[in-house]
Each structure stands twice: as C-alpha cells, then as structure tokens.
Image (cartoon, rainbow, N blue to C red):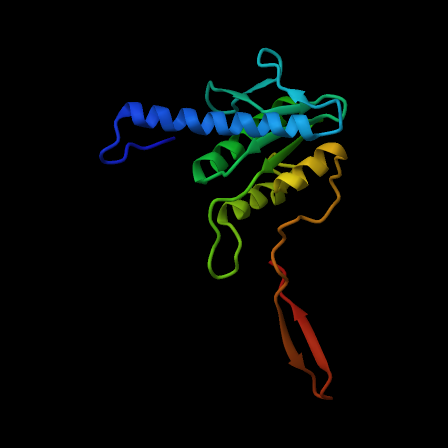
Length: 183
C-alpha cells in the first residue's frame, strides 16, 4: 500500500508503483535466465493461484517448480507492507498446496539496524518461518537465490543468522564457563 505524500498526485503514486512492479519483473526474468535448472517457470495465473484464507483476494506467486514442488515469492527490497503481504500469501498457499514448499527470495533488505547490522524485515520473515506459518525457507542475495534455484536445499543454515552472543563466567575453580544466550 502506498500512501500519498504531501505534494504527490495520484498519477505520481501510480507511476511509482508501476516502476516498482517493472523492477520486480526484471529481477524475476534475470533469475529465470541465470538458473541452470530447467524446471523453473513463471506462474500460470489461471492455475497456480491461492485464495486468501480470510478475505476474497487471489494471491499469485512469482515462480514455481512443479517437479520439486516449490513456490518462490521474489522481492527486490521488501519493506513492512510487502513483508505483511508475503506472510498472508504464504498462509494462503500452504492452505491450498500443503505439499509444496514456500520460499521467499530477497535481493536485498532496504535498511539495517545500527546496533547489530540486521534487518527487522528479515526478523519478521524469520519469525513467520520459525512459527511454521507458511514460509519454509528464506534466501537472501541474488547469488544465493541462483544457487538455491539450481540445487534446492532446505536443511542449510540460514545465511543471515543472528550472531551468537555469549557471556563469560568463571566457576569456583577458576575455569571459564561459556553460557550461550539462545533466543
């Protein structure tokens, strides 16, 4: 959803949305051209859509590999609205296609926190994945997405996993004891 900014006309907003759509379409074309796995294709709009679980909206995913049973939602630089849509779309696709994997492919996240260099948008997607709400895998970076499309693996460690904090303590004998803080 794009909000009108002071001084922007509806035509300006429409033009901006069209530019975003074209940039996303170009990235999807690039992914399809660079993958060596021939099973990937654009979604057939009349067949591979999923109805929303709560409202009467149709969700349409970006890429599909029917042989591997994988759907990919590709996003160039998702912000909060897109992340919310991906979350709802994942739930709808899992409801209609429970045996397919739902993968989110992100070119880059728009902003990072200064404190740890991570992205809150990535955190939101990871939370949906961890709770089992539809997302099966998150791939970040164009090279990583191409590697995944060439050889889909779901048991790999997340590329942008949070750094592992630890606290050093010493027991009564003076030996160092490391406590991991898993969140």
